[in-house]
Image 1 (cartoon, rainbow, N blue to C red):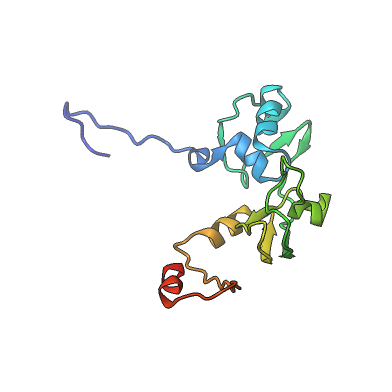
Image 2: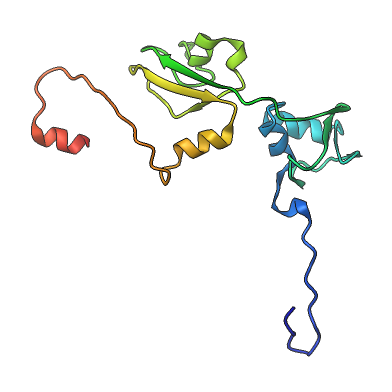
Length: 170
């Protein structure tokens, strides 16, 4: 506590455990139950309870690991994390849906992979190792440049490549 200018003592404000949490709609989506927009709709419709009280503010901050959250009367909890390692073939996109109807990694893996997040991207003409996971913290950690996970790319080219061209590719 520090004295104020006028000689009164300022009291420390109590910090609730939820002050450092995440918005309720994000917490529900991170639990893998609904997308964030679906969670927002459910909250606004009065289908979500937080600590046994109906909550209709999608932005209310919660700590999912510590706060009891219910959807339609059922307690929500994190499903077991899943990670799939896929050798992505050429001609397959790393996206959930393609408006042009081209095949995606989710078409290759089927419905059981719909809740998984691709860790990085490989373009249409590329084949290679691709991770898909429900653990968004793992995905964010792997993709964080500060972590410095080495990646190795093997490229085949047609024609001759000069030393200067190789230098610009590195």
